[in-house]
Length: 435
Image 1 (cartoon, one colour):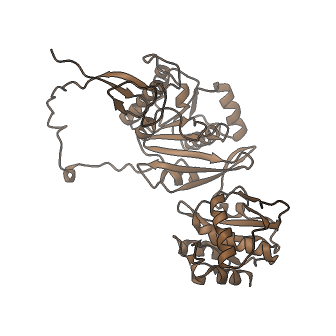
Image 2 (cartoon, helix red, strand yellow):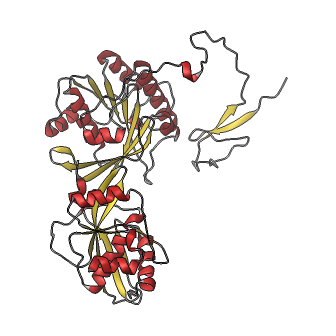
Image 3 (cartoon, one colour):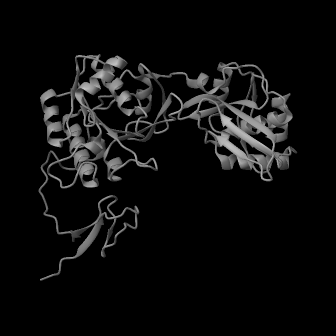
């Protein structure tokens, strides 16, 4: 009799090893390796003519298209709206506004005449209704239920037969068929698998709320992100009211879109033109400020870079940044000193964006350098000037992507002078901006 081969497989990522270990060598998770028997020979099943494989050219397709949620910023991120049978995962930090956003989506869709089922596993139905009354999200076609058992959730779906179901959240629902408490990897996998299967079989979109860990990744097994069709991340600074929804994965549309929202006492509001949020209200010429145009997804946004340079009182000058990459700013300071002749070795330098904007693309290099040069010389950059471009270590101003879109957005907002890669060298670009 042949000996059965025993493997140990990670419940998080699926990595296997012939020997047990306390930590998975692939995803670094602890205590996730479980014993699994060797693979047995599968039984061959006869395939019917209707299910037989066909050439791709002979396969018929159904184009139901997208169903708009009427929340245009959310539709932008989804690629146009909801797709029948789609499984959508929305993640974000606690308190950022995930439930408020989805309640707004549910009410907007319900007001168009579609049945929406909102399953809250974290709050009671009365608590959800109180928030809905405060934000004006009450509709007769919006059904609420508070369930933490997977079987009850499926039963609610069968009873209501909605055209959209929202589960808040997938980590707080548990199945009695699986050992362990809610939130365990096996439970999350079982719950998500059943809800996704329900969506596919009934051609009904299902939206799941996902918690995040301390490092910002989605809690639970990584297979959760592979199972769903769309993964969106809801982010924002708690010090500001601005919120962004970004697409991390989308089988039905682009993955580079971003939706802008603003949290208020009346709920969550769309921000279709957020350029005004990232510039200071004081339009008077002040040194140490420069306007740039950054691109988030397919959207061009105007942003203001502010810099302050003062003589340092310590042997080692301070370098403080907010909203921009600190290592990038350190490199630009070295280039300014070496290529543009601006002495900064004995000065404290502070660089920040306005309105909580976070800029990571190198297209903001030129605006950061100009703002620092303006602060050093105490010479203001005129309001009609906008700058964007990547700066190399040699002091060359290089071109960036979507330059035509950036120029068009700057012109729309009244910036008549554009300083970009056409200036070739950093020293010349600073001279053009400062006049």
